[in-house]
Image (cartoon, rainbow, N blue to C red):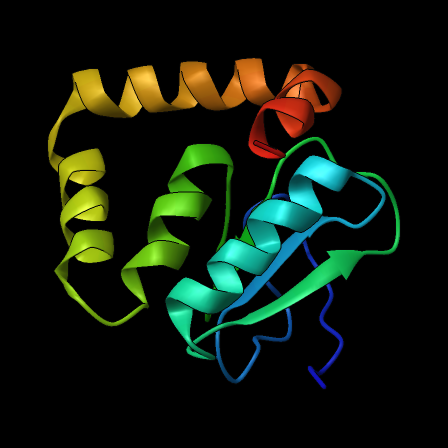
Length: 122
């Protein structure tokens, strides 16, 4: 069980967690499916928990900062074993084109969660 935390602003965490926490919209089927995938890929390196209220995008709470959207997703995957999560996160950080494209695709998926939930079922 993770310790409760409080956000001072959208980015600064007043009380930091012991290990990173990935927060997703617990009322969203699409989000729950992806949370299960993140749990499997990160193998317990991060805590994954649903939000108590609807949120627009996934959030990764690290020591002093909160990241959202595609950046949060790639950062979360970078905690997992194996090179792919680290490589994707490195590409996100180093390539402006990849970062902008990732956030754009993430935004589309976030706005159309029911549709993408159906696609992920197959």
